[in-house]
Image 1 (tube, rainbow, N blue to C red):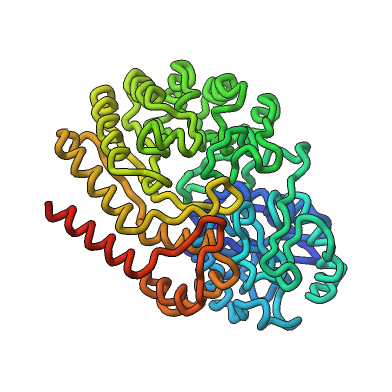
Image 2: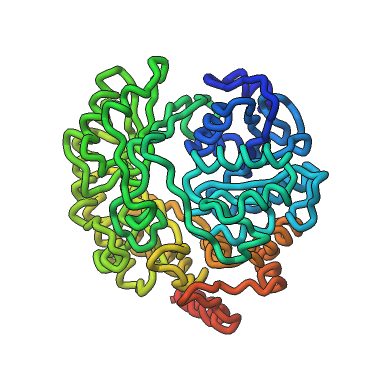
Length: 500
């Protein structure tokens, strides 16, 4: 869709005359950008500053939506980066705007280029070559401090860097190098983040999003939002959640890493549904589901009950300290069937440390039990990728061939059990998970490899070549890259398995 059509479909777009306009850039398409509550929150915060306005641009919207201006015409570009593979979008948007992608090649003729977003909670080092300043962690307060400093510095790099030295919450790549500073936390009084704009042109069509909680009190060892992040989970009171929902909002999404751990979640959902609205929740914990909660979700428009198991077996869930057990998943299937939900979807990971074929076989057996209860089961399967700032930081990637072998084994087991038409398997790419892993565990050189690979066509082969050329090696405490001999051996093992 063109810019005018996108704007015409929006509700809540902010328009403001201001002395200072900055470009708020999302390095993925519009549909993803406007589904990001963090992106919308920073949009709100910047517009709330005296004399400042933020104009949005995305990977597929190169000129700003509000002003129809190229991003190169702004004094400051503020990027929101959610995960590793979006770094290619950073390179593309800068290249397309005629702005040098590398911070080291820019001077005061070019805009300041800053970044923040969820990726800063794990490993922002691969971002470092592209940005003058990186805002670490929760940005509601730090972005105001940065904007004031940038304006005072006349948007000149050296003056801005001088003013930010020693201040918490700012990663200055030219100064800190690969020694990443701690993340910042916003004052609880600034919670919850809420949608500014509603639009039908997203995955969450016309949904008003609001935080129910921020952070997580659980200790899953693979997750960057575990209890060690910013002091654990911060609960938004029920009254604040409900009071912040505008009358025109017909669809409400409750956002957070562990929404169903909210002590008043049933009452919150009841308030929304009894008000004649539909409801969505960003994460359902199987061990927190009750008959009343699922009944309310069904009444509020739910058609798919989505929960996470993550480990393929009870043993694997203990390994990653996931509290979900098979009995919780079975109970979820029972609730989905009782309340006539169309699908039970379960997120699982393959290639978790110490996983074996026997764990996959146990998942097949669990599938028998789930399919006997609910007529439609779907697995969202993702390869395990170790992230920085988690207890599993540095754990080696299982291997593309290993993950694909486990996927083949799972499908074969489901087929042999007569579940081919009852249990759907929806995997994500093992190859691109490996690329994500190399970035998640990499340093600045990994970001340079993204730039090279993207400019060479962005194929998997281009990434492999770029990682080798840049000498990218995962550097976590237990990380290593499989040798070419190991990869060949794994491929032969897989071919032998497929032949038997």
